[in-house]
Length: 214
Image 1 (cartoon, rainbow, N blue to C red):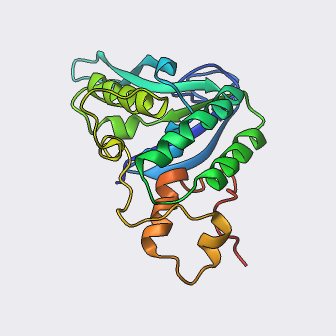
Image 2 (cartoon, rainbow, N blue to C red; image 1 turned 90 degrees about the vertical axis):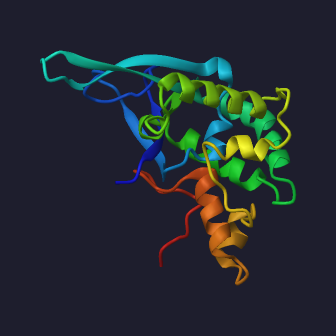
């Protein structure tokens, strides 16, 4: 079974929100991806917005609860939208020659505002399971968010290599504006996969970057 990540909007200030754990919560899954955390989702957050929570995973053989520590980013939607102005140029710089992400940014903003909810977070519990510990995942996530927010760590010569540890873009995929992507005869499979790696695909709500079904 594929590991999934979700971009979530909710009305409570919490990470890994769920109707079972958070009484009365309003929650929307805005987008989903498999085996990756889309790069423009990361652009919504800063390293100071990473939080940790303990989750009861299961009961052990002795009946005791197994508690797992999980890390996730959380921000107010309007703060996340404002952050995109700074982080999107850094993302473009990590992949020179691929194109502009201004159209993608604007469509993501549209989806966030249309949710009508005040908070945005990423549920990446499945992805974090790939790492030996949550601390390893949290450290990598923090370094990626550092880069996107303007921090250049010593020895970081290829930011795309760093970001690829969380999101693997096809080497020849382009950042095409959405209308061109879905109408041009020159669009490649790599371009379409790149769109998914940037923004994710539909989870619960229609997305303006996906093709309109006739």
